[in-house]
Image 1 (spheres, one colour):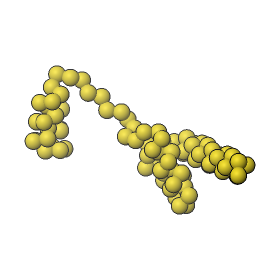
Image 2 (cartoon, rainbow, N blue to C red):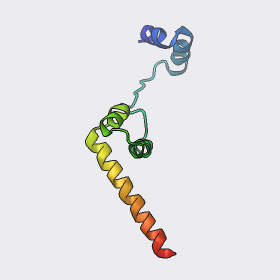
Image 3 (cartoon, helix red, strand yellow):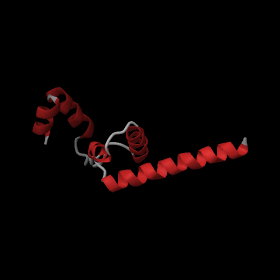
Image 4 (tube, rainbow, N blue to C red):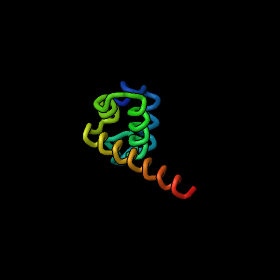
Length: 88
């Protein structure tokens, strides 16, 4: 494992990881970004006209999930806008 880390990030950084985490089991989540961030970015990219498939591939979520989250976000925005216009 350390040889692979050394090849990937360099010996000095691999040694830092070894010194800080030796003897511990470390697990890395399969998803790099938090859900809230992905939804925000997906909505932003969708509004720019980017393809749902491209967005899904970039953030490692299914197209279906991205579509559902975008639809939910748009509905929440619409609901918030309606509430603001009613209270004026």
